[in-house]
Image (cartoon, rainbow, N blue to C red; front, side, top):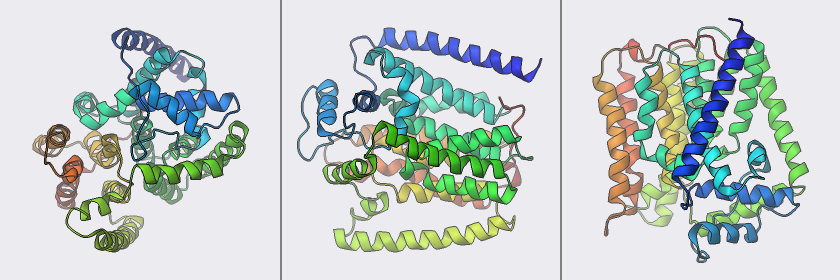
Length: 399
């Protein structure tokens, strides 16, 4: 079978699955307003198409009334649109549909895209790994809300597989990869350090089409955003400033330290610890550049650093430190089942324990972020793990 015929068959199967799953989700969610995060994009996108300001308080109020059935208080999440306009481009086919159908299609698209990207990246990986994602509370929460983090995380894992394969990709696939990496920057606070790793890996492998494609795609996304929202940078920054106030966002590392220290001491200690983490990262990068460090260890450091330097948000933000764990499970060839049981099984249990405990009275707010505690022990174990825990299955015949 020729590659073109195979790709057409895969595309048709994807579209057929999308239609069936969308109909099923729409039927099961009649009368229920799911996709709260997607609602923000749906209303903001329609406002932008009409020439209105997608970052306006009016759009935020529409989201509040439609989803929460009431207006938010001054210090409550205003659920305003806080992304660059090019985040809306992928949703353009859905913006003219009724929200119930648009949300169902988007949710189905997220689920199928995760399956497609991960199975395409690691065709030899155990199938249970991908299906077990549905046992993770942050993943389920992200799917239900229609949050972009789910898709961004899957794209980053796919790109990691491409950049750590035995042989460089063909130029056409590198160009596609560069475009996809540029797209992940719709969530810069989530993807920035992973993107830096992937660009450095491309530079190390001399995959110039990937780097050029990324640069051109990012420039095109930023430039074309002016066509949708002519003065978007100022409006976007204004919305981000409002977001930081009404959500009272601190970096996760400062949030943790505030449980034990005064606000000023926590901020100072947080900055020092992030600086130390940066120095560790520089040393790891030097060893990695000299081929003295496994890709996965530097990838894990990216997940650790991004989470600690990430403004505290919802539970689906935990996907940022689950990316390295998921990558490890997909690429490992060891038949030893104890480590996945401890670290991945423990992560699943801990995610739901945090979900339950944070709803109990008199429980410290930091409990909601305790899921993160699975990452440091896994990284320490990884430092002394056998080679079989790192061996990557090279992607075969990517579509």
